[in-house]
Each structure stands twice: as structure tokens, then as C-alpha cells.
Length: 345
Image 1: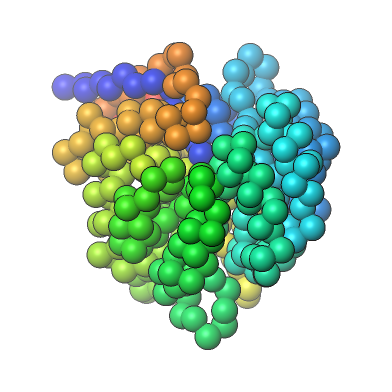
Image 2 (image 1 turned 60 degrees about the vertical axis):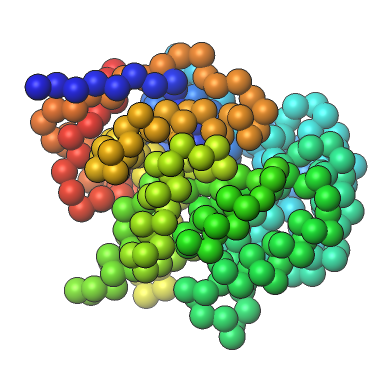
């Protein structure tokens, strides 16, 4: 018997659209199901100033399929030379919704990020003053810290001291991957945590057991099963601290299947099907709307999308395994189990 679930149209609070041919290939996959998305600024060169964000937004809008109502929510890439008044002006105009903090070297195209956090205190103080959220990639980059411990160490040595030094700063800890991240976000005011589709489904065994699986490699890297279960509990709890940020991050296959493969999982196409399976397994389908459609807008002080989508359960959905990008392809995230839920057209 067919089951159905109707929810407010979801939003994606952490999305990589890239630029050029890649953006043209992946943007329709997000615009099909999502009303809005926080668009990451780590292009080459990065989106640092308000003028950069305005130009990038125009390129996104020009690449949208005809009739799409998707709204890109722009961000600025924080550097050690970011001008606080440029941030203030971009926020006042409604152009940007957040500023992104990358610790330098933490992930793809993050080398222009922050090494000395004292150098960005002026920007953070302006953001706290005007209520502009900071989205943060929450990992240290110290070579002496194990890659599986970098999130927990970041919370203790960077994020918590930074928040204590900047009262009123609103923070989204993006793509949390550990129980430590869940517990910290839960304990804070004016703080949210995004959780990705793939981190709800895979643990580190999926990447490493039986041979290296490059299309599961992401940063922050997937952790132990106990941490995945903590993420599932947080996402399916209905707790307003937690909301969807897919971190859908496409790379062409030749750069994923490489001696030094890129970090990133492309999941825009099948995220809602994956989430419905995860929430149904947890006995929490009634909490899917909060996670995907309500908690994020509430944190960002926006109204939920006025329209709805309907998911139905039936025979397994056959999603394309790959999407063409020029002469190459992007591989879609494979959850490793059949997807019976689909978004109705």
C-alpha cells in the first residue's frame, strides 16, 4: 500500500554549487526539491567581498532552469583581511545571509581561510552586533591532531573560546560528525548544527573496508558508528538546534578517483529519499519536516517556505548513478540500500 508524507518545501543550509559547467550540471538537482540554500563561497578565487557575492548570485540565477523558484542565500568567505564594514553593508542590503569561516587548509579551496583567529575579531564583533550568523567548518588543521579527533579538538580549543570572547555571535557548526558536536551544539544558545545526508548513513568503515571508496570520502571524514548513531538521534529528535545541510559537494570523477582524491559527496538529487528512509527506520517520519523544513528557517529568522512537497513510498526509485559534466561525470551518493521514498513531481 502506498504511503505518503506532505511537508513544507525543504531548504539546504549548506550547499556547494561550484561554478561554470559544474554549476549548470548540479544546480537543477537542488532546485527541483529545495526552496533555498546557503551557498558556499569557496570558489577559486573565493567569494570574499559583497561585490563577489552579487556577481556569483547573478550567475546562479542565470543558470536556473526555466520556471524554477529556488533562492540562493549568499555567503562571504572570511579571510584575515576581510573588511568588517563590507560585511556590514552586504548584510544590510540583504545580499548575504551568513559569513563562512574556514580554518586554513581544512577542506576544498580553504587555503585562503583563517590561521590567526585574533585577526578576525573585528569582523566577528560586527557580526555579533548585527546578528549575522557565522557558518564554521569545525575542525582544527594541526598535523599532530588525528583526523578523527579534529572536530572535538576544534570545539575545545577554538570554537568555545571564540564564542566566549564574542558574546552574541550566532554560529552554525556545519556538518557535525561526532557525539561531541551534538552535545556541544545542544548545550548552547544562539547556535545551530547542520547534519549531512551522508553522515546520517555512512561511518568510516564504508570508506575503508574492502578497499578505499573514494565517493564516500568527505571532510569532515565519517567517524565511528557510535557517532553516526548520535547524529541520527539528533536529527530525528525534532530538536530545533539541528537542521539539514547536505554539504552536497560535487567533484568530477577523475578528481575523486585519483591518487589524491578530492573530499566531497554529491547528494542533492536523492537527499529527500535518503532522509525519508533514515527517519522511517528511526520511527520518526513525523520529525522529518522539522529537520528539513522548519528548524533551519527558524535559526536564520526566516519564514518557512509557503509551498509543500509530497513524498510517497512504493517500488524502489532508480536514480541516475552519474551526471555528465562536460567530458566527465559526477557520481551520485549511493546509500547502499534501496530507496523506496520519492518526491512526487
